[in-house]
Length: 212
Image (cartoon, rainbow, N blue to C red; front, side, top):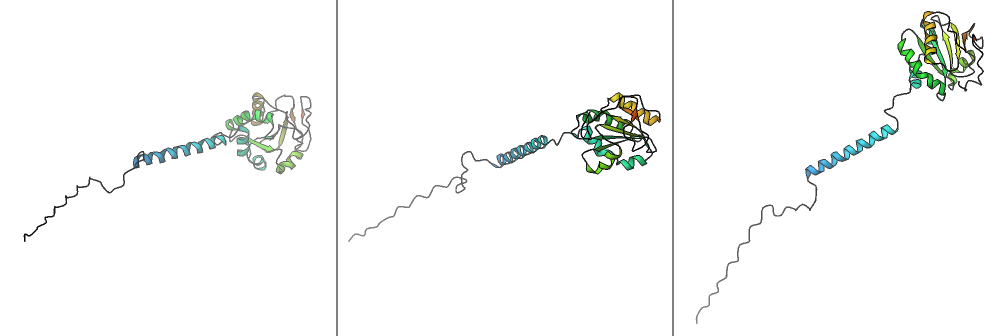
């Protein structure tokens, strides 16, 4: 009986896998590490720009107006009257347009004569200065009280003043000479003497919250 021999055919060897096989393939359009860093930098720049815009909207870069700046840096009245320098005191209010109009000239005088003249601002809306409002008979603003180097009251000015007028008043205080002949400006005989007796006509003002 003839023997049958079965010969098994060898299976073909599997083809080699391409390089990188088995690793997940990136999705089309996915950002790589460099693109991710760029996105973060862009987001940071946008956030910084928004923060700067908010800062500007809130007035963060606007310098203080001369009136507010001068008020913040002025000495307390008792200190100014005792330091051996002439003193110019202004009774003012934040809402007073005449006070705001005078503020640049007042600030300029303070800077020009810093160390020789004291400029003091007292807000009529601050209850702290109510005794001074009564003592100096403040009936309208702006009102200036003028003191010599010894702290003695020498004059009063009622109403708004131009830069040349303020310079003339300051020069008289520094030189210890009579005050200039201006309407609404005059000497005072005492701290409680009421209205100033000046060369000009009396200035009628409605009250400490009115303004010239």
